[in-house]
Length: 266
Image (cartoon, rainbow, N blue to C red; front, side):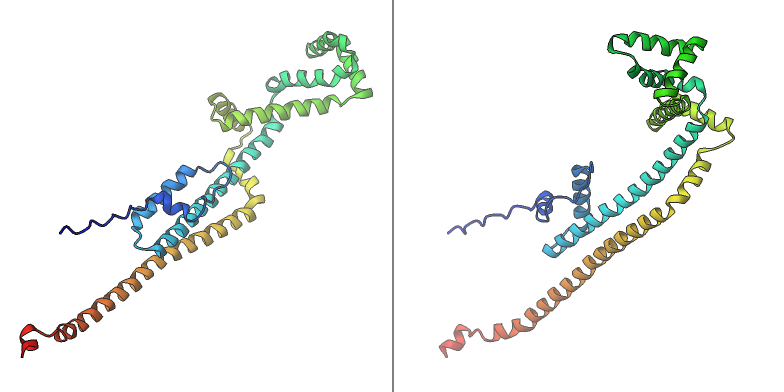
């Protein structure tokens, strides 16, 4: 008679184990696939033996992800300080030729409301003539602005600020022209981006220190979970060892209690 074949228990996949603990604790544009990859790699390294291992693995992955997040945020904060310091530098050192087009746009925006809708071309012509340093246009624009609009200095600063913002965005994208231009401006001013960063980052040292403390806490908790896996497996090994010893100790008694056929017949 054939022994009935037992139904094999399907292997639990890493994704199923992860789903037991809810969705990944992601923020913003953090990638779920990257989190899952980290989970799978930790699980493959640990090789869980029971549900307690599964719980500890989930803790380790979440804490490791949190640690990586704090480190990434610190890097982002420092980079934001650097770009902010560079932008403030550019607002003070951009030459007229680098923001004159934006000045004309800002000037036109300031004087256009003073003309009626069908006089839009007149406003553009006046702004254009002002940029060509025509005395009549300069007098007319100054008269308009002094009575009803922002000052020329305000428009100049606004144009320089907008040009600096646009240049920093290109620099952050590693545009070669923007990088070269900013390096030239820094060299002309006998300044470096590191020096600007040093001045700016002093104001954020408390924030960086707090991030470091939070990262250290996450790292300590992660290490504790790793140690707990080792401790759990030592305890599990001791339990299994005692169980085997008890079985081995009871086995002779079990054999002695089984009467043989010869003894029974006598």
